[in-house]
Each structure stands twice: as structure tokens, then as C-alpha cells.
Length: 171
Image 1 (tube, rainbow, N blue to C red):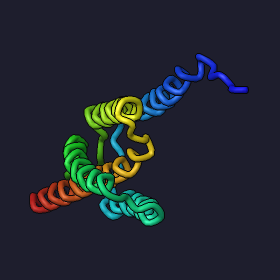
Image 2: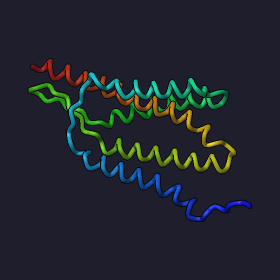
Image 3: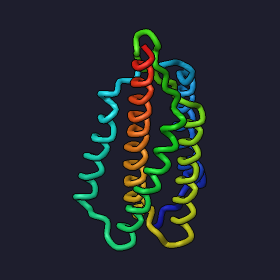
Image 4: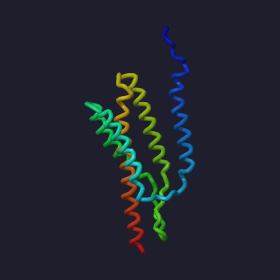
């Protein structure tokens, strides 16, 4: 006896992730206009943690063939996107105390939302039409995220350091 899929299961698979993304983004957008301290010493933490996770995943199941090439391309694309995303973050230096602050950019948030939408659409389209397993898309996505997180932080570090040096030289 074969079990039939309930018609509601199909759309629930799309609605639930969208609802979670909307809630998370709404909470982040609420805090978007607020300045937050930027500590140059801690910008390396997220990329290093994500590098450790990515390395463990690639070590346990190394990408092979076209998936490996796709991972390299995704890493490079993620780096380009990450640099662009980093430039969208506002960085301010207090002229008197030289304290660094950042204000996340709404453009950077919308950029991230657009990436999620494109990724979801591509995964859905490729999974249905080309016979590509959605599991084959996870390795390039991991590589893309590694490049994006790393270069976002590198761009912010370099720019914040330059702004800080400029502020100190004015005194």
C-alpha cells in the first residue's frame, strides 16, 4: 500500500521557511537604524568559525568533479558579493574618542534577502528540471557563504582601520 502525499505538504514546505525568514529579517530590520560598536579585534571570529565548519564538512565529504569546480566558482562569487556587502555597511569614527561604530545598511540586508530568494529559486528549479540533487548544491552554497562572510569582514576591517587612522591623524 502506497501512501499519498497530502496536497498541503507541498506549499507548507515553501511557506514555513519564508515565514521564518520574514520574522528573522523583521527583527533585524528593527535594529537596523541603531549604531553598534565595531570592534576590529573580533571581526575575524565569524569567518574563522565558519571556516572550521566548512572544513569539517568538506573533509568528511569532499566535493568531486564538477561539484568541486562549482565550489571554487562559488567561493570566488561569494568573495565578490561579500566585498560588495561590506561596502554597504556604514562605519563611523567618533572624532573625540575614536570609538568605531557600525550601522548595518538596509541595502546590505535587502541584498542578503535577494541572495536567499535567488538561491531558493535556483535550488527549486535545478532540483526539478535538471536531475541535479539538491544535496549537490549544498557544497557550493557553503563555499559561497565562506567567501561572503570572510570578505565582508575583511572589507569592513580595512575600511575601519583606514578611517580610524585618518581620524587620529587629524588630531
